[in-house]
Length: 372
Image (cartoon, rainbow, N blue to C red):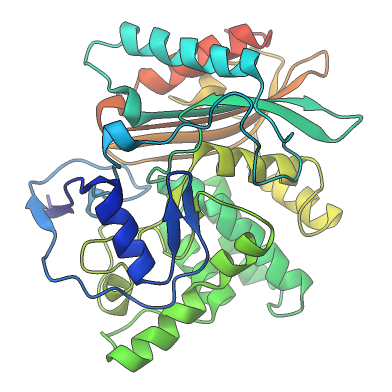
């Protein structure tokens, strides 16, 4: 197996300084703004041993993006939701409690110990007439490495660029979007990132050219920031083995500029797509078509939230995984019409294959959604 690169946790202050040095504001609710340049850090990443990985993404891109456990931020009950949009301004105490109990139950059920800071959950209940989502969570504002769930953000940004006339929809682009979402293909994602940001991979760049290249790569971050998104950094491709050349430069010396997402940010975007609230209704319809899962053997269903839903339920979802993270964004519709959203992130100690489905099962039961 190839040699993998890992980064030890550096604490909130150290991580924040690295992002702020790159022009990206970070607080304990996540990331804000757009990266303008790569910070100059002196030490190389620590080297770790080989590990297995799925085709979704390699461990070399998943160094621990861990804030100090004692400093991790949790959005408390009654705290205003700064992201607005379809999510109601305040978290729901009942859903907060459900999320906490689901996490605790799953942590107690799996064989290996799970640390609470390695788990992030956001859960929502949809009110169709008002077009809003009542929500709650457990560590829902903490940022995690999102693996392939970040592809949902690249999908939405591509639709925005197409709607603005800055990107032409072609059969080849549609093929890339489909493969990126339906089958989570990383080569397809690379094509989408290049097309939407007008950048390409290649040899290393001198500082001035790299700064210009990085600025173009921040196009998606600038758009999501303009919509009020927090807790997300979307500027990198996804990989099977890892980045090289300018792509590697773009991560920063310690991979500090890698993709990142909070469960709450992921839930917001999925909700906006499902409720026709981002880009346009026609763009949302196209995205929903790619997210719809019908096969029980779909690799983004097996081992994820979709494996727990009742036979007649419907699901639209995007999952992501490496050997150290498992993440899932899922919109589930019960036969009676009740709709809920699950956004579940588990990393490091919460990477157990049985952990995420157990969390999903507990949440679905509490939300009165039929389960298997």
